[in-house]
Amino acid sequence: MVNVKVIAEHFEATIGDHLKMKPREIKRRVASKMHVNANMIKCRKAKKMIKDKLAGNFLQEFAMLWDYANELRLKNPGSTIKIAVNRVTPHSPTNFKSVSYWQLLGEMETIRCT
Image (cartoon, rainbow, N blue to C red; front, side, top):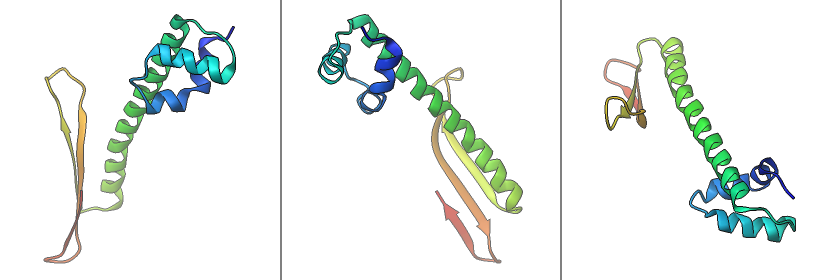
């Protein structure tokens, strides 16, 4: 028998790339690659574990954007950094839209990165 953690570690890249993969497909792949039988509950839990891990990674990367913008402001005084985000409702989590960076080089020269 194989446990949930082993399934999640072994198939993390595959399930991460194909988030809509059904637990039945995961079970079939476990049987063919690892030569063991796993029940549907373990496959479902492994998929959930991987999805939760990926969601956590996205939240950490999103938080790093704000740190990056603050670091740009500290290192480049006089520059303008804007981070655009969307919210579906006032209580929903923010969705990243874009980062804009302007730096004044001279009187008429500007750099804009989006």
